[in-house]
Every structure is written in C-alpha cells, then in structure tokens.
Figure (cartoon, rainbow, N blue to C red):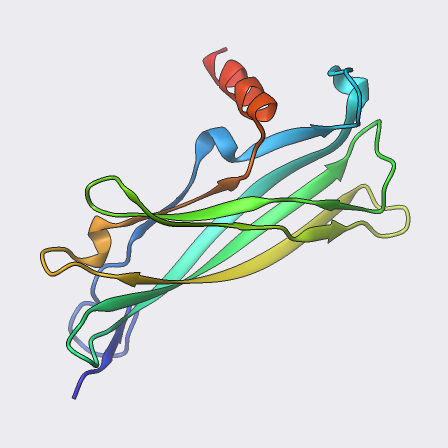
Length: 166
C-alpha cells in the first residue's frame, strides 16, 4: 500500500525533503508606471512586491511512480504611487519548477487583482498555488527548485537589474 509522506508528518522518521522554494531576487518587486513615456517617481502608478513565500509538500508513491505535491503560500502587496488612477491593480507573477539539471519543467503565470479600500494606499493578498512534480528515479524532492517572481516586462527587468548593480 502506497502512502503519503509529508514534510512535518506525525511519525518518528524524518520527513522526505521538500523542493527548495525561493523568490527570484530580480523579480521580487517592481514599479508599475502610468501609460506614457515618463519614468520618474511621479509616474509610478503602483509599487508591487512579493513579500513572503512558504510551502509544504507531500510525496505520493501510490502507483509505483513518485510524485510530489507542493502547496505554496505567497504574500503579495501593492502600494499606490503618485500616478495611481485605479481602485485595483493586476499583479502577474510566475511559479516555475526547475529540475535537478536546471531545466524548467513547468512555468505558470497567475494574474491576481489586488483591490484597494476606498481611500487605502496599500493592498495585500495571500495566494495558494499547488504544484505536482514527477520525481525522477535518481532524484529526491530536495533536488528540485520552485521559483516565484513577478512576471516583469523587459523594461521592468532592466530597471531591476540596474538597481541591483548599484
């Protein structure tokens, strides 16, 4: 009989290791500018960021193949900027599963909408995302990575890389 072994299970043996989950530093936060060419501080409509990431996992070997189910809890926040004109902002972010050889097994983009209270300047949201990872016969969950980050456009990524070098 196959069973589930979870990270933090209630038995005396240590649980199998979960994949390493991390927020991509270059895609952790970004300003969203109003439409147009302006790109100074007065043109920022919203500043968004991923604040937190945690997860749990369970192994399933019930049919002779090893699969790992991972549930991530992702904290996302947005702050209105000087150019804010809306009551909400869509914050696209990605979750990618990386195999032990460094290849992307899967990547999905999610697009939650953060809604601001009537006169609020900040909004937060907690997202839960479940991933099912087929584990190769020579590997364990700890050999895989789950990466999370904002789905940035080319300009946002370039700006973040410039800021990081400073």
